[in-house]
Length: 429
Ligand SMILES: *[C@@H]1O[C@H](CO)[C@@H](O)[C@H](O)[C@H]1NC(C)=O
Ligand SMILES: *[C@@H]1O[C@H](CO)[C@@H](O)[C@H](O)[C@H]1NC(C)=O
Ligand SMILES: *[C@@H]1O[C@H](CO)[C@@H](O)[C@H](O)[C@H]1NC(C)=O
Ligand SMILES: *[C@@H]1O[C@H](CO)[C@@H](O)[C@H](O)[C@H]1NC(C)=O
Ligand SMILES: *[C@@H]1O[C@H](CO)[C@@H](O)[C@H](O)[C@H]1NC(C)=O
Ligand SMILES: *[C@@H]1O[C@H](CO)[C@@H](O)[C@H](O)[C@H]1NC(C)=O
Ligand SMILES: *[C@@H]1O[C@H](CO)[C@@H](O)[C@H](O)[C@H]1NC(C)=O
Ligand SMILES: *[C@@H]1O[C@H](CO)[C@@H](O)[C@H](O)[C@H]1NC(C)=O
Image (cartoon, rainbow, N blue to C red; front, side, top):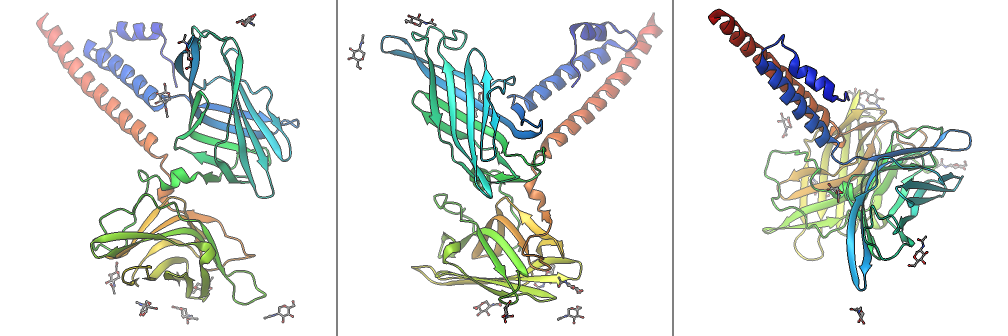
C-alpha cells in the first residue's frame, strides 16, 4: 500500500485547483482509508520462510502468537507482561532434515520461539514449542529481579497434518505452561515442504471445523428444521473412509470420507448422535446412472443414493433410520435432493460443517466431507469441486471494494459541491 508522507498530505492540503471541501473530504477519506487498512491488518502476522541447504523452501509459517508472562519484581511479588510475536524475526537456528525439522524464530533481546516437527510416512506433527525469554531485557520485563534466560516447553495438539499440506487454524490455541501463556491464532504452518513450494491444500484444525460461527447451512427442504442446535458437548465425529468395489479384485468404484452427526427429534427434544466409523459396516453398489452407499451401525442405518445426470452427479436421496438406545426409532427419507453436485469424474468436497435437513424430525451434519460416487480410478479421489462455503477469505476484498466505491462517490459529490461554491464565489466578487 502507498504510504502517505507528511509532505504529500501537506501538498494535498495546499492544492487549490479543487474547492476546499474536496480537499477536506479527500484528506478525511485518506485518513479513514488508512484506518480501515490498519483495521484489516490490526494485528500483524509473522510470516517466515526457511530454505534448506539446496536453497529450496522447506519450512513456511504465517501466524500470530500472543504471550503473557508472569515474572518476579520483588520478594513474593510478581507482575505480568503481554506482548506479541513481532513481525520481524530471525530464522537463525532453523533446521530442515528428512524426518525432523525445527523452526526457530528469534526476536528482541535474546528471546526465541522454536517449533519442533517430526514426520512419518504420510503425516507430520508438532512435537513441542520451546519459548525462551530473557528476563534481562528490561524493555519487556521492567523491574525484573532476575536476569536469567528461561525456557518453557508447550505441547500443542498439532498432529496428523498430511505431508504436502499445510496446517491451518484460525481458532485460538492457548498453551499454558508455568508462568507463560501463549495464544496461537490465524496459524498457517508447513514443514517438510516438497518441491520447494508451499502446498495449496490444507489440513484444517478441528477447532475451525466445529466453530459454529462459520458453519454454513444448506437447507435441503423448506420444511422447518429441528430448532434446537445439537448438544455442544458431543465431540466432532470421527472422519470415516468408506469405499465400495465392484468385486474382490477391483479397486474402489465409489469413495466417500466424512464425519457424520445426526440430530433427531424425540418428542420436543432434539438428540444428537455421532456415527462411529470403526463400528460401521459399509455396503452399496456402483451403477451407471445411480450409485448407492449404505452405512450400518448399531443405532444408525443410512442410505445415500447418488445420480449420474450424464455430466454431473448429485446426492439424490437419503434414507436414515436411527434406533436410539432409549426412545423410539426415527425413520426419515428424502428422495428429492439435489446437493453435493460435481462433474462426473471429479469429487465433491466440503471441509466445513454442512447441515442437511432431511425431514422436519431429522438433520444430518457432515464434517470434512469428500465423495466420489462415479468414475473412481486407481482407488483415488479425482480433483475436487469444493463447496463455495469453504472460502471465507472473500470478505476482505468485498469490504475494500465497497470502501473504494464510497470513496469515489464522496469525491465526486464533494467535487460537484466544491465547483458550485467556487462558481458562486466568483460571481459575487
Ligand atoms: C493479541 O494481542 C493483541 C495486542 O495486545 C490484541 O489486540 C489481540 O486481541 C490479542 N489476541 C488474542 C487472540 O489474544
Ligand atoms: C513469601 O512467601 C512465602 C511462602 O508463600 C512466605 O513463607 C514468606 O514469608 C513470604 N515472604 C515475604 C517477605 O512476604
Ligand atoms: C545476574 O544477576 C546476578 C545476581 O543477581 C549477578 O551476579 C550477575 O552478574 C548478573 N548477570 C548478568 C549477566 O547481568
Ligand atoms: C481374483 O484374482 C485372483 C488372482 O489374481 C484369481 O485367482 C481370482 O479368481 C480372482 N477373483 C475374482 C472374484 O475375480
Ligand atoms: C441410464 O440412463 C440413460 C438415459 O437416461 C438410459 O438410456 C440408460 O439405459 C440408463 N442405463 C442404465 C444401466 O440404467
Ligand atoms: C454417466 O452417465 C452417462 C450417460 O447418462 C454415461 O455415459 C457415463 O458413462 C456415466 N458415467 C459413469 C462414471 O458411470
Ligand atoms: C427407507 O428405509 C426403510 C427401512 O429400510 C424402508 O422401510 C423405507 O421404505 C425407505 N424409504 C424410502 C423412501 O426409500
Ligand atoms: C422435487 O423438487 C423439485 C424442485 O425442487 C420440484 O419441482 C418437485 O415437485 C419435487 N418433487 C417431489 C416429488 O417432491
